[in-house]
Image 1 (cartoon, rainbow over the protein chains, first blue to last red):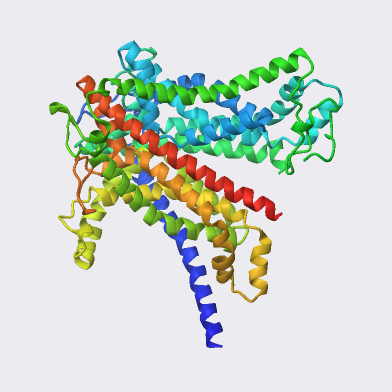
Image 2: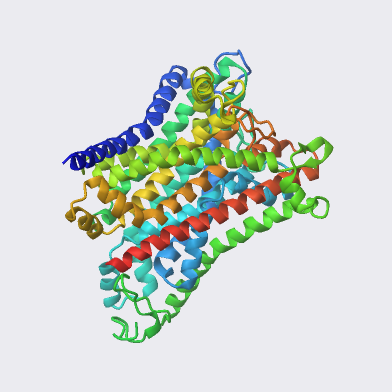
Length: 282
Length: 336
């Protein structure tokens, strides 16, 4: 009986410990979110979104160019990354069952673990070296390449959610495969594909490391693809490692803006998967 | 697989018949009309594009390191302890050491918590709680690295300096790991912040793996009189061991390459210290700090060489991890 009591005690203790693990895992999240909101919110104002950064001590500086730069870089990244990533994902879902498909899937999985800073160096070699200057284009290429493997895997997963019966029905009507793929399968999976894209964009918008030596930074507005460009993340980094209290404050506020941006993208993606037709079939 | 004829499409090859578990839609490999052939070719070339991306990454890295070929011996590069770009002395060991120490520390901290969390999520949590916790874990994974760094620099580091490190030095100060002045910045800070960042990776893969453990194994243990924990320890965890190993390797791969948060809290000094309180440097951090301002071609090539080392490590780890996780899932399939 004491043996049994001991076993039950161990059971209770371990159950408690696993519950505790959840709490411990979530404490940093709560602390971090609370801190970013409480420290960052005081710096929010309209001019923070529209103004250029100012030198230390000069009031009223903003992150307008960095915010725009992030959107610009992510836009360029989409031009590079979406066709490749979504395309490879559709290939994996539609034709990926053979040997070649498994090889590509494995490549995508391994590539998705490659550190983003390595991809930054690749973009440096591909774009900055031949152009002989840091540029928005180089940053876009870096983020774009970074998107491809994860985008391919998420796209595949979400396209595969389309029920086989839809494809069978279409094929049974004598519709050729390519039309079935495009008009039935992919149209049904459109919500899923958009979700995958949103997740990839959110991830790209939060990247810093590959931008440090591709897009570099810029104190002014920039729309030219061949010029250095500011970004939200690099700006946060520069402000954070500076010795000035004023800039630290701006780093917190910019981090809040970044979190809102990334959070909104993620939540939209989540909402789309919930509501899509694909969801019902699971 | 030779028995039954293919289900649909009479002209498709027998060799391409569905494997068990596939959807019952056969995909013929010999498209009949022009549109189908074009579509198939287009898809295959899009898939091939991904392989091209992989090739481009390797080639671009290799080309950037060429100025170093013939001048610096590979082993000396990896073993060298002195990093002085001005004197053209390039030794990668302090960075490799820093990367390994911080990543291992992160694993040591994150693994038990992640596995505990995964067990709770799969075996214990009430149904209503699961989506909430998994949403929070996803949020943890979605927070950008630089924001973690900001938090680490202004919250974690001062806390370590004032509270944690003095306490550790008092209690465990006889170990070389916990000696030296409490600076806050250093291996300990970097390892802890990495632990938070890789926790979602390890936890979510472990959850996936635990879900593939057949319910019959649990039932068998329970019916023999095991308590819930005993069923987990004796039936579930042994079955999932290789998969948890894979999850750990994935987490390790992520920790190795993490750049911004580590750069902001590790102190950035290319030195090797036994103490976790000391400052150090990692492979990604030195690339982040020096690449844009690299003065000589050799300096840049050496940094690209570090990137190549990092790339090689991450490819090895990820490949091993994926194969392990895949093997576990495949093994489960045969249980039915």
